[in-house]
Each structure stands twice: as C-alpha cells, then as structure tokens.
Length: 298
Image: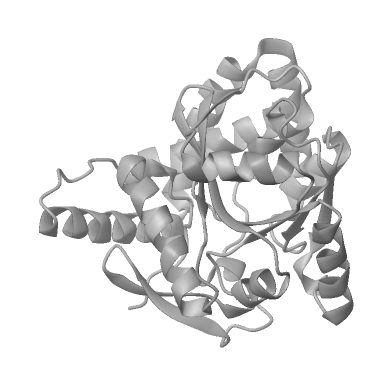
C-alpha cells in the first residue's frame, strides 16, 4: 500500500521546470497546457501507482453513483492525470505571475457570507483544505488574500516543484510552514495569529508521515478511509471559526471557490462534515480529485 508521502514526483526537474516557465512566458498558458498534455501522456505510461489509484477511485465513485441512482462518471486514468498536470500549470501561473489569466467565481452561499463577515470584522479563520481542485491558486483572487495566511506543507514532498515556486513566487502575505515544525510552540503562535485576524490553512485529507497511526476512521463515497487526527485537533484547539474550502477548475482557466463551515467540535463529527463536503464536490467534478495514492482502505 502506497501512502501519499511514498509517492514521488514524476517528470519534474529544475531544468525542465525552467524550460516550461520559459514556454509559458513566451507563448502563454494555452501553449504550455498543450505541451504539458503531451508530456503527461508519457508520464502516465510509467506512473503505475497513479494509474492504479485513479482506476480504483473511479471504480469506487461509479459504484457509489450506481447505488444512489446517479449517472456514472466516465473518464480515463489518462484524462484524470492530465487534469492534474493542467492544474499544476494553473498553480504555477497563479502563484508566479502577477498577470495571471486565472479567473475565479464563488459559490456565495450562507457559509461564504459568514466567512466574509468574519474577515470584515478582523477575525481569524482556520481552513481545512484538500487535494481536491487547486487550493494554491487562491492567492490569485484579487483582494481575497490581503490577510496573512499561514499555510502548512510537507517540505520534503515534491522538492523540484517546491524549489521552483520558491524562486518565482509572487506571494505577498502567505507564510509557508513545514509540517515538521508543528509543536506546542507553533500551536501557540498559530493561536495568537488567529486571534490577531490572520488565517491558517492545513490539508486534512492525508495522514501525517510522523504520526501515521493517529487517525480518524471515516467513510468517503461509501468506502472506509482515514484522516489525520492531529489536524482536526489542531483546528479545534485554536478556538476560531473553521471552514472546509476547495477551489475547483470548471473549464479552461476558470475556477470556483466553495466553502463549508465546520460546526461540530468532536473530531469524528468534524471529519464527517469535512468529507461530506468533499463528496458533494467530487460528485460534481470527479476528475478534480488529485489524491493519487491509496486513500481508501483495502
């Protein structure tokens, strides 16, 4: 069984990333996506784990859809991997280019309005993000990220792309923290930051490589899975509003931001609310699920 931290980058490299950046700057995002579409086809041929997990995800998704009288989603593993490759291009464009063409719309539901009210009065908020869609592209939304955002990531994962971002990023108010840095002192710092009106974001859809046994057992698409207990505990002890958030590609360079307020404070119930929200989005945008590892239990 391959967990997410055991899956390595494929097709990335410093020179290749710089070449693709040059193509983007010279010919634009459409030309780069055309090239990346071709490259991703060859990468997919050698990416056995990605193809296997994509097929398993699709089988579980289709079974759930059939049981619930829904039309089964039809897509190939290649199309799924290509969608991920294009999301990486959008991520690069949004983070590294102030002239990005990425466009955003928002599901302006009651939870979104509550989030806006929270931010307007200077409160902080804790975001439970995922690898559904393209959360990093949120930094391109005009005036939406004018608050300081503390984002946590595994520094050892995907080093080629991460180092490229460090060289070219146009981040203004985003502070990247390593998940390895999380301790009592860091928890105290984040608590203070949230009380000062800043924001914190952590992925809640993958277990910690440092605590792989500290999990919440739950279900997604009717199949057993596990989530990181520490993230939900961290969010709870910060004593602030908690929102699940996704940013999905609807077509071309167009994205839609969706949020869901997490009401529960029991970690199991928090996980259920979070997964119910992700499931709703996955059923609408099935190829935006970018967890190419064994997310579901055997």
